[in-house]
Length: 277
Image (cartoon, rainbow, N blue to C red):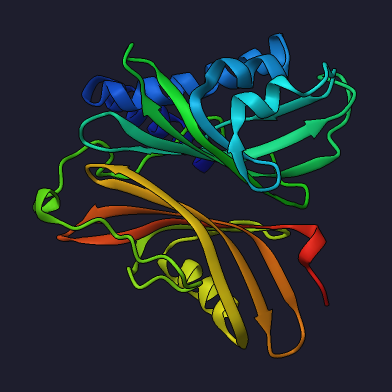
């Protein structure tokens, strides 16, 4: 208990300092929390329609315009709740992402959660200065423990990286194990599994995915970036030598650090209609 109290105190003051030094990162996290709060106080549908960018993308099951998809959904009392536990932003304060656990309660806020997972939202600053979600995706897994309420950040969040202005975008995308090395704080998301965090765990998970592949294909790649952060998403199909087949959506985020691009987040969301044993 004593160690937990010390951790919470340190986290609180670290967040306070961050809000003073990097206001755009703090604004990004506050936007994410406002997004979740609107879902709780009004409805999940209303929240998505408000916080998605006009060209924002969701996956149902492939990438489609988010506002069009949510506008067609009927009203529902079901509550999708979430909170950010990790966030990052580029030096210009225009592009960043938030991620953390989600839960779904079909009977609303007073009901029991029946589904769990982790989400990833990529945010882009709009002309009016507000952040709106340009990509929203997630994975499902078993019930998780309640996370700490404080949001963590990489030490270099919102800082400029030397050499990034001369760096070519990391458009290589077509392999389960990225050519760009995982960062020390990398996160790997896979359906049915809890997140793999850190360089060693992330690399181990991606290497396991890449083992035994007989055939692989990627299609419909879309990419964007701003300064130190770059991302791509695509549709994939895999066939393994043991007969397993998978398809789904693959999203990867890179960050420019120490003179090179590093893989910060790697997410694969499989689709049930093309998975087999």
